[in-house]
Image 1 (cartoon, helix red, strand yellow):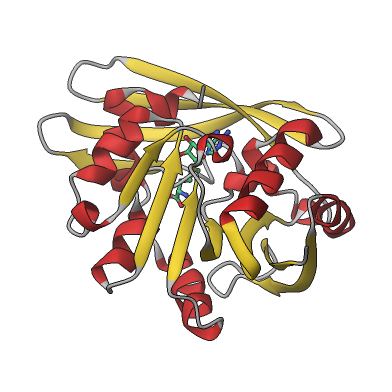
Image 2: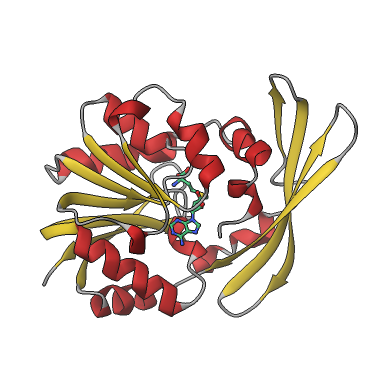
Length: 242
Ligand SMILES: C[S@@+](CC[C@H](N)C(=O)[O-])C[C@H]1O[C@@H](n2cnc3c(N)ncnc32)[C@H](O)[C@@H]1O
């Protein structure tokens, strides 16, 4: 079960409106070209921003996410009819042989324990052709981004058709050695009501990514800076080895 902000039908419709700048996806579109891929599996596709961007460019795309409400938003977008949408996790995928698998928007951090993370990596491994690539991002632990997760530094506002002005912000409730738990509050100006969603994210070091990728049959071949968030995100490029 994904967090309420992805699962709740109203909150899922707010996701793109509260975070409209998706220049972060360009690095994936560029890597698609650089790696000479012709087919993509987008794991944790959410509202389908990357999946529909690539399918609109003629790419063969399979997109999977456990949040049905987010998939409903995705399926209404231009380019959506050309995508093969799957409701579930990577473990629910049918047999595939794609060139490239992606996890954008820090999906890799939702896998808090290593058992689930390794199961996801192994399923992605099975869905890739030999020497296919996996590209994903994860926040740099040393940047301690959670120190900016508060109403002052991370307030988002949108004027949502039929809903009115909505404000959203995170509040950190617990920081452990490797995970951060926070609440996202959504405030609706039309009646002053609020909704909340709780999330926990795992911050893995490059060494932890290297070893878990290796256990799942990948070799980490590059770690890049995200051009739109320098110093804040590691973009991992791994290749399926066996
Ligand atoms: C921050 S959103 C990112 C969505 C999308 N990739 C993007 O860039 O906008 C995280 C996504 O991970 C999905 N997710 C949660 N648990 C998952 C799992 N076990 N397997 C795959 N995706 C999962 C959520 O439903 C949500 O859509």
